Length: 314
Image 1 (tube, helix red, strand yellow):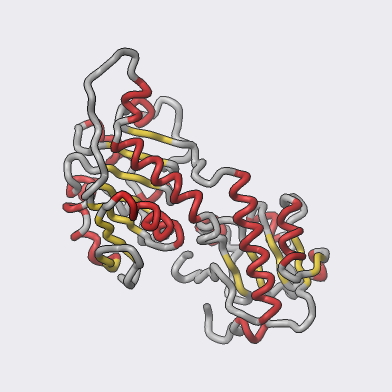
Image 2 (cartoon, one colour; image 1 turned 120 degrees about the vertical axis):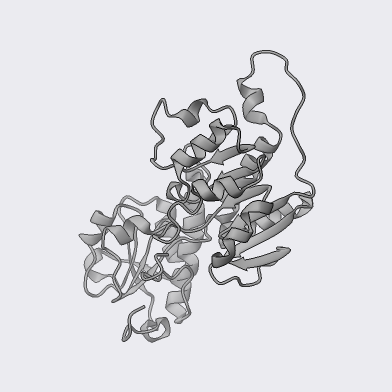
């Protein structure tokens, strides 16, 4: 945050935090505020806002007295692009709140591709037997935050070797190796499976482009459950068409939604889901849990979960 912006502890209050909730939010979100010890108020009285709508809608109710804003998504690139996030108050994302369900979806895509389910689902006659096991495979988790760490835990019983990549290269529990982002070039040639779970920033755009895809083993699986912009869609489609990859599992695309008639729709080794890794019912519950926890932390003067750094972009 910018110099001179107060730390969280300096903004604590001994009384119940006054929290305004987006009027269009599910009732569970308002209940979560109260469960966390907050008091529901109108926008004009609020010191904190829990918002589930659009950046434009938030800008209309963001008063000078608001010191903390809870956003509904893990990725915040659209909020930064809209210019609504400032350095005068605290902003928190929902990063990690949806980790389990998104990691579960990533695991589904990995297993489906490894066992060639897309081809089987499209077949109209009995074909040859194919598929492979993950046991002994090297799985690169690029972006080992909440989702990445949840996936690593799920992969443990499958006896794979995990290479975890984070911005700093910190040790990631469950990973055989942990590498910083500036050593990604070492990862591509040995990765049987690449799971993209990094935030979308200017630095991560086309993290997997033509050169990176060419560096992967010929039968590598590519999974994206983060943001479509992290993979060069044209390069991916070309690599698949040329038989350069074992398959691609995409819950996000660039552009999104993927246009009807796009080459990836007819690619037999592509499995595409419509940004559904976080089902609506699970999304509301996950956000409610985060809201309750952060309201309680705000009331106690403790560090909030998911604090956004505008300079880093997440």
